[in-house]
Image (cartoon, rainbow, N blue to C red; front, top):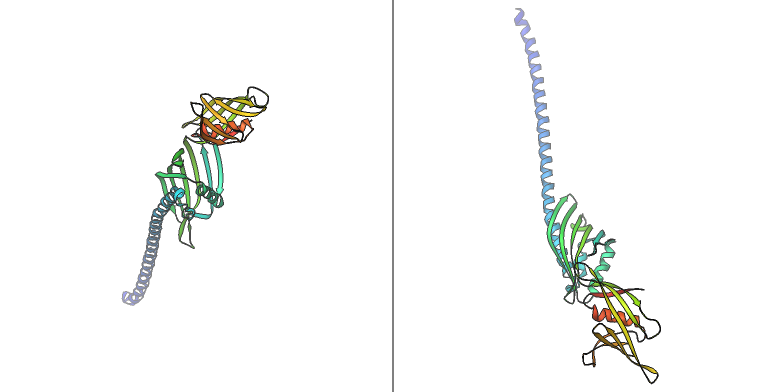
Length: 313
Protein backbone atom coordinates (compact mmCIF):
# COMPACT_ATOMS: atom_id res chain seq x y z
CA UNK A 1 0.00 0.00 0.00
CA UNK A 2 2.73 2.42 1.00
CA UNK A 3 4.99 1.31 -1.89
CA UNK A 4 2.28 1.71 -4.49
CA UNK A 5 1.42 5.21 -3.26
CA UNK A 6 5.12 6.37 -3.34
CA UNK A 7 5.95 4.82 -6.71
CA UNK A 8 4.71 7.71 -8.93
CA UNK A 9 6.64 10.19 -6.81
CA UNK A 10 9.87 8.18 -6.97
CA UNK A 11 9.43 7.74 -10.67
CA UNK A 12 9.23 11.52 -11.20
CA UNK A 13 12.36 12.09 -9.12
CA UNK A 14 14.24 9.44 -11.05
CA UNK A 15 13.12 10.89 -14.37
CA UNK A 16 14.16 14.40 -13.30
CA UNK A 17 17.62 13.29 -12.18
CA UNK A 18 18.04 11.24 -15.33
CA UNK A 19 17.20 14.22 -17.53
CA UNK A 20 19.65 16.41 -15.63
CA UNK A 21 22.37 13.80 -16.01
CA UNK A 22 21.68 13.57 -19.73
CA UNK A 23 21.84 17.37 -20.02
CA UNK A 24 25.18 17.47 -18.21
CA UNK A 25 26.61 14.71 -20.40
CA UNK A 26 25.33 16.44 -23.53
CA UNK A 27 26.80 19.79 -22.38
CA UNK A 28 30.17 18.23 -21.65
CA UNK A 29 30.18 16.47 -25.00
CA UNK A 30 29.32 19.71 -26.78
CA UNK A 31 32.15 21.55 -25.00
CA UNK A 32 34.56 18.78 -25.84
CA UNK A 33 33.47 18.83 -29.48
CA UNK A 34 33.81 22.65 -29.62
CA UNK A 35 37.32 22.59 -28.18
CA UNK A 36 38.33 19.74 -30.47
CA UNK A 37 37.04 21.68 -33.47
CA UNK A 38 38.80 24.86 -32.29
CA UNK A 39 42.06 22.99 -31.74
CA UNK A 40 41.78 21.35 -35.13
CA UNK A 41 41.17 24.79 -36.68
CA UNK A 42 44.24 26.17 -34.92
CA UNK A 43 46.33 23.31 -36.24
CA UNK A 44 44.91 23.91 -39.69
CA UNK A 45 45.72 27.66 -39.54
CA UNK A 46 49.24 26.92 -38.34
CA UNK A 47 49.77 24.42 -41.13
CA UNK A 48 48.48 26.92 -43.68
CA UNK A 49 50.83 29.62 -42.36
CA UNK A 50 53.71 27.16 -42.43
CA UNK A 51 52.91 26.35 -46.05
CA UNK A 52 52.77 30.07 -46.91
CA UNK A 53 56.15 30.60 -45.24
CA UNK A 54 57.64 27.71 -47.21
CA UNK A 55 56.32 29.16 -50.46
CA UNK A 56 57.74 32.58 -49.53
CA UNK A 57 61.18 31.01 -48.95
CA UNK A 58 61.19 29.85 -52.56
CA UNK A 59 60.18 33.33 -53.74
CA UNK A 60 62.82 35.27 -51.82
CA UNK A 61 65.56 32.85 -52.90
CA UNK A 62 64.43 33.32 -56.49
CA UNK A 63 64.49 37.11 -55.99
CA UNK A 64 67.99 36.86 -54.53
CA UNK A 65 69.29 34.93 -57.54
CA UNK A 66 67.67 37.40 -59.94
CA UNK A 67 69.25 40.28 -58.01
CA UNK A 68 72.69 38.63 -58.11
CA UNK A 69 72.43 37.96 -61.85
CA UNK A 70 71.30 41.51 -62.65
CA UNK A 71 74.07 42.98 -60.48
CA UNK A 72 76.74 40.75 -62.01
CA UNK A 73 75.70 41.70 -65.56
CA UNK A 74 75.30 45.41 -64.83
CA UNK A 75 78.59 46.39 -66.49
CA UNK A 76 77.35 44.86 -69.74
CA UNK A 77 73.60 45.52 -69.68
CA UNK A 78 73.68 48.96 -68.00
CA UNK A 79 70.24 47.97 -66.64
CA UNK A 80 70.12 49.68 -63.24
CA UNK A 81 66.36 49.12 -62.98
CA UNK A 82 66.79 45.34 -63.07
CA UNK A 83 68.84 45.59 -59.87
CA UNK A 84 66.87 48.32 -58.08
CA UNK A 85 63.48 46.67 -58.62
CA UNK A 86 64.38 44.24 -55.85
CA UNK A 87 64.93 47.05 -53.33
CA UNK A 88 62.30 48.60 -51.07
CA UNK A 89 62.17 52.39 -51.27
CA UNK A 90 63.16 52.66 -47.61
CA UNK A 91 65.94 50.06 -47.80
CA UNK A 92 68.92 50.54 -45.47
CA UNK A 93 72.31 48.88 -45.45
CA UNK A 94 75.52 48.46 -43.47
CA UNK A 95 78.77 47.45 -45.13
CA UNK A 96 81.81 46.40 -43.10
CA UNK A 97 84.83 45.70 -45.30
CA UNK A 98 88.44 44.72 -44.64
CA UNK A 99 91.13 45.25 -47.26
CA UNK A 100 94.22 43.09 -47.79
CA UNK A 101 95.98 45.05 -45.03
CA UNK A 102 93.14 44.13 -42.62
CA UNK A 103 92.08 47.75 -42.37
CA UNK A 104 88.35 47.97 -41.79
CA UNK A 105 85.79 50.50 -42.91
CA UNK A 106 82.08 50.92 -42.23
CA UNK A 107 79.56 52.42 -44.63
CA UNK A 108 75.87 52.99 -43.93
CA UNK A 109 73.68 53.65 -46.94
CA UNK A 110 70.12 53.75 -48.29
CA UNK A 111 68.15 53.55 -51.55
CA UNK A 112 69.64 56.72 -53.01
CA UNK A 113 73.16 55.72 -51.99
CA UNK A 114 72.91 52.30 -53.66
CA UNK A 115 71.40 53.86 -56.78
CA UNK A 116 74.30 56.32 -56.96
CA UNK A 117 76.78 53.45 -56.60
CA UNK A 118 75.16 51.51 -59.46
CA UNK A 119 75.15 54.62 -61.64
CA UNK A 120 78.92 54.98 -61.17
CA UNK A 121 79.40 51.36 -62.27
CA UNK A 122 77.37 51.96 -65.41
CA UNK A 123 79.30 55.14 -66.24
CA UNK A 124 82.71 53.49 -65.80
CA UNK A 125 83.62 52.13 -69.19
CA UNK A 126 84.84 48.54 -69.24
CA UNK A 127 84.04 47.84 -65.58
CA UNK A 128 82.70 44.38 -64.78
CA UNK A 129 81.73 42.83 -61.45
CA UNK A 130 81.38 39.07 -61.13
CA UNK A 131 79.04 38.36 -58.19
CA UNK A 132 78.76 34.62 -57.60
CA UNK A 133 76.69 33.17 -54.74
CA UNK A 134 78.48 30.12 -53.38
CA UNK A 135 76.28 29.03 -50.48
CA UNK A 136 72.97 29.94 -48.85
CA UNK A 137 73.42 29.52 -45.11
CA UNK A 138 69.91 30.43 -43.99
CA UNK A 139 66.51 31.00 -45.58
CA UNK A 140 63.68 31.60 -43.13
CA UNK A 141 60.30 33.32 -43.36
CA UNK A 142 57.86 34.16 -40.57
CA UNK A 143 54.76 35.92 -41.72
CA UNK A 144 55.71 39.07 -43.63
CA UNK A 145 59.44 39.02 -42.85
CA UNK A 146 62.07 36.86 -44.51
CA UNK A 147 65.78 36.48 -43.74
CA UNK A 148 68.33 34.99 -46.08
CA UNK A 149 72.05 34.68 -45.35
CA UNK A 150 74.55 33.74 -48.05
CA UNK A 151 78.23 33.71 -48.98
CA UNK A 152 79.33 35.36 -52.21
CA UNK A 153 82.63 35.61 -54.06
CA UNK A 154 83.24 38.71 -56.15
CA UNK A 155 85.77 39.83 -58.72
CA UNK A 156 86.16 43.36 -60.07
CA UNK A 157 87.76 43.85 -63.47
CA UNK A 158 88.21 46.72 -65.90
CA UNK A 159 88.89 46.17 -69.57
CA UNK A 160 89.27 42.45 -68.76
CA UNK A 161 92.05 43.24 -66.27
CA UNK A 162 91.33 41.96 -62.74
CA UNK A 163 91.57 44.64 -60.06
CA UNK A 164 90.47 42.82 -56.93
CA UNK A 165 88.87 39.66 -55.54
CA UNK A 166 87.09 38.98 -52.28
CA UNK A 167 84.47 37.19 -50.22
CA UNK A 168 81.35 38.56 -48.54
CA UNK A 169 78.86 37.19 -46.04
CA UNK A 170 75.54 38.92 -46.62
CA UNK A 171 72.39 39.01 -44.47
CA UNK A 172 69.29 40.24 -46.29
CA UNK A 173 65.94 41.05 -44.73
CA UNK A 174 62.99 40.82 -47.11
CA UNK A 175 59.68 42.48 -46.36
CA UNK A 176 56.31 41.56 -47.88
CA UNK A 177 54.56 44.52 -49.51
CA UNK A 178 50.80 43.97 -49.31
CA UNK A 179 49.93 46.55 -51.96
CA UNK A 180 51.95 44.86 -54.68
CA UNK A 181 52.26 41.35 -53.27
CA UNK A 182 56.02 41.50 -53.76
CA UNK A 183 58.93 40.61 -51.50
CA UNK A 184 61.48 43.45 -51.44
CA UNK A 185 64.89 43.84 -49.78
CA UNK A 186 64.30 46.01 -46.70
CA UNK A 187 67.80 45.81 -45.21
CA UNK A 188 71.10 44.14 -45.95
CA UNK A 189 74.31 43.83 -43.96
CA UNK A 190 77.62 42.92 -45.56
CA UNK A 191 80.85 41.72 -43.97
CA UNK A 192 83.45 41.64 -46.72
CA UNK A 193 87.07 40.55 -46.85
CA UNK A 194 89.30 41.54 -49.74
CA UNK A 195 91.33 38.46 -50.66
CA UNK A 196 93.42 40.00 -53.41
CA UNK A 197 94.08 43.53 -54.63
CA UNK A 198 95.89 43.57 -57.95
CA UNK A 199 95.13 47.13 -58.95
CA UNK A 200 93.88 50.10 -56.98
CA UNK A 201 94.81 53.41 -55.40
CA UNK A 202 98.50 53.78 -54.58
CA UNK A 203 100.39 56.29 -52.48
CA UNK A 204 103.88 57.68 -52.70
CA UNK A 205 106.34 59.87 -50.84
CA UNK A 206 109.04 61.98 -52.50
CA UNK A 207 112.37 62.98 -51.02
CA UNK A 208 114.40 65.48 -53.00
CA UNK A 209 118.10 64.85 -52.57
CA UNK A 210 119.33 68.07 -54.19
CA UNK A 211 118.16 71.66 -54.15
CA UNK A 212 117.68 74.35 -56.70
CA UNK A 213 115.67 74.68 -59.88
CA UNK A 214 116.29 72.09 -62.59
CA UNK A 215 118.59 69.98 -60.45
CA UNK A 216 116.20 67.24 -59.42
CA UNK A 217 117.25 63.97 -57.91
CA UNK A 218 114.43 62.25 -56.06
CA UNK A 219 114.05 59.18 -53.93
CA UNK A 220 110.45 57.99 -54.43
CA UNK A 221 108.76 55.42 -52.18
CA UNK A 222 105.52 54.00 -53.60
CA UNK A 223 103.04 51.69 -51.89
CA UNK A 224 101.23 49.49 -54.42
CA UNK A 225 98.79 46.57 -54.21
CA UNK A 226 100.43 43.27 -55.06
CA UNK A 227 97.85 40.55 -54.62
CA UNK A 228 97.62 39.33 -51.04
CA UNK A 229 99.18 42.48 -49.57
CA UNK A 230 100.70 45.87 -50.34
CA UNK A 231 104.33 46.28 -51.36
CA UNK A 232 106.59 49.27 -50.78
CA UNK A 233 108.84 49.95 -53.76
CA UNK A 234 111.61 52.52 -54.09
CA UNK A 235 112.78 54.31 -57.26
CA UNK A 236 115.43 56.92 -57.93
CA UNK A 237 114.47 59.70 -60.36
CA UNK A 238 117.25 61.75 -61.92
CA UNK A 239 116.42 64.81 -64.03
CA UNK A 240 119.11 65.83 -66.58
CA UNK A 241 118.95 69.16 -68.39
CA UNK A 242 120.82 70.40 -71.44
CA UNK A 243 121.01 74.14 -72.11
CA UNK A 244 120.97 75.18 -75.74
CA UNK A 245 121.76 78.81 -76.67
CA UNK A 246 120.85 79.97 -73.19
CA UNK A 247 117.43 78.41 -73.47
CA UNK A 248 115.87 75.22 -72.23
CA UNK A 249 117.06 72.28 -74.28
CA UNK A 250 116.69 68.54 -74.07
CA UNK A 251 115.38 67.18 -70.78
CA UNK A 252 115.88 63.58 -69.76
CA UNK A 253 114.51 61.62 -66.79
CA UNK A 254 116.40 58.51 -65.74
CA UNK A 255 114.71 55.89 -63.56
CA UNK A 256 116.90 52.83 -63.12
CA UNK A 257 117.41 51.34 -66.59
CA UNK A 258 114.51 53.34 -68.08
CA UNK A 259 115.13 56.70 -69.76
CA UNK A 260 112.39 59.18 -70.62
CA UNK A 261 112.38 62.29 -72.75
CA UNK A 262 110.42 65.17 -71.18
CA UNK A 263 109.59 67.75 -73.85
CA UNK A 264 109.10 71.47 -73.36
CA UNK A 265 105.35 70.97 -73.87
CA UNK A 266 105.16 68.40 -71.07
CA UNK A 267 104.91 65.24 -73.17
CA UNK A 268 106.87 62.30 -71.76
CA UNK A 269 108.26 59.68 -74.17
CA UNK A 270 110.06 56.46 -73.37
CA UNK A 271 113.48 56.44 -74.96
CA UNK A 272 114.55 53.42 -77.03
CA UNK A 273 117.82 51.57 -76.47
CA UNK A 274 119.37 53.27 -79.49
CA UNK A 275 118.58 56.67 -77.98
CA UNK A 276 115.73 57.54 -80.33
CA UNK A 277 112.29 58.61 -79.13
CA UNK A 278 109.88 55.80 -78.34
CA UNK A 279 106.19 55.67 -77.44
CA UNK A 280 104.32 58.42 -75.62
CA UNK A 281 103.94 57.60 -71.93
CA UNK A 282 101.92 60.57 -70.69
CA UNK A 283 101.09 64.22 -71.13
CA UNK A 284 102.26 66.03 -68.01
CA UNK A 285 103.09 69.51 -66.76
CA UNK A 286 105.82 71.24 -68.81
CA UNK A 287 107.80 72.49 -65.81
CA UNK A 288 106.80 70.64 -62.61
CA UNK A 289 109.21 67.79 -61.85
CA UNK A 290 106.92 66.26 -59.21
CA UNK A 291 103.99 66.03 -61.63
CA UNK A 292 106.30 64.50 -64.22
CA UNK A 293 107.31 61.86 -61.67
CA UNK A 294 103.68 61.13 -60.82
CA UNK A 295 102.86 60.71 -64.52
CA UNK A 296 105.71 58.27 -65.08
CA UNK A 297 104.72 56.25 -62.01
CA UNK A 298 101.04 56.07 -62.89
CA UNK A 299 101.17 55.56 -66.64
CA UNK A 300 104.30 53.48 -67.02
CA UNK A 301 106.16 52.01 -64.05
CA UNK A 302 103.06 51.05 -62.00
CA UNK A 303 100.39 51.19 -64.70
CA UNK A 304 99.48 47.59 -63.89
CA UNK A 305 99.06 48.33 -60.18
CA UNK A 306 97.72 51.86 -59.74
CA UNK A 307 94.44 53.37 -60.87
CA UNK A 308 95.54 56.57 -59.16
CA UNK A 309 98.41 57.72 -56.95
CA UNK A 310 98.03 59.90 -53.89
CA UNK A 311 101.06 62.03 -53.14
CA UNK A 312 102.20 62.49 -49.54
CA UNK A 313 104.27 65.65 -49.38
